[in-house]
Length: 337
Image 1 (tube, one colour):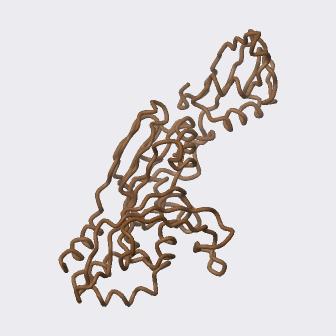
Image 2 (cartoon, helix red, strand yellow):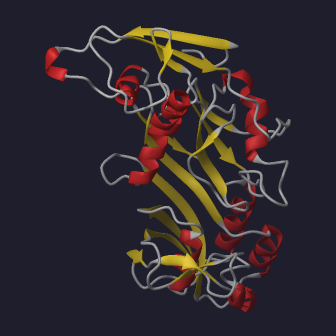
Image 3 (spheres, one colour):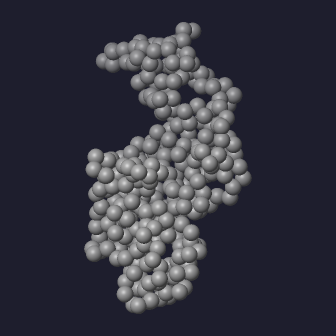
């Protein structure tokens, strides 16, 4: 089934054995049309786009019978509200189902109030063009996870319903029953007491600043694992910062930033969750102070992404090196050793 055609009729014959009885229409379609998500198929049924013989069937729970011929009319994917914009992207991998990009810092992922244009979605619509076959009936990229505006690194985006459904399931599972991994490199103030550790602290909206998240009792479970990769000394020779590798068991908003601040090691450059650490910059060597001042963002980079391909189920692995601004920061911190 090709989502780019003006109008498509897919005709399939459903043969139901006596052992199967009379299965529901939506379940039969889910089995025979895996390229469309269950929610998309349900919507098509309710819109009258599915017929048995010449009779439209609008009830997803309708029971089909042996020998029934089901005809599905899938309309062309509608144009999205966001428009394509020519924005340079670093494409790490792309095929008919997914695209993986190395997002630069400063790029907002999705259009929203205050960011109606100039986003990753605008860039992907222009880059992918007609290869976007329509997710939920709309020709748009399927965002299954996000990075904060000022966090750089690897993101995977679905290009069709099948990929969107499969990737969403993997990200919801967070590697508990599959091999998906997401890894981040974080430059933090101070050095944790332990080389490896786990932060398990529930997250919810901040009670007074709604644009922020906070560790709060009764919030949503959130688990972050970390490992100290390197430590950096300040101008007095004492440890002042560290490079951590972090991995997620959950995917809450601002999770790594809030969790690291919660244990007393906020990200360098994080003006939201580590403003009270600004005075620590005086402990850095002059070159590191200059590199941090020039950074202008939280020092967080999504360097690792491992997932199963939504169609082939092949395990795919990508790593992205630190972007230039974090390489400069790392180099300046190392120079003080």
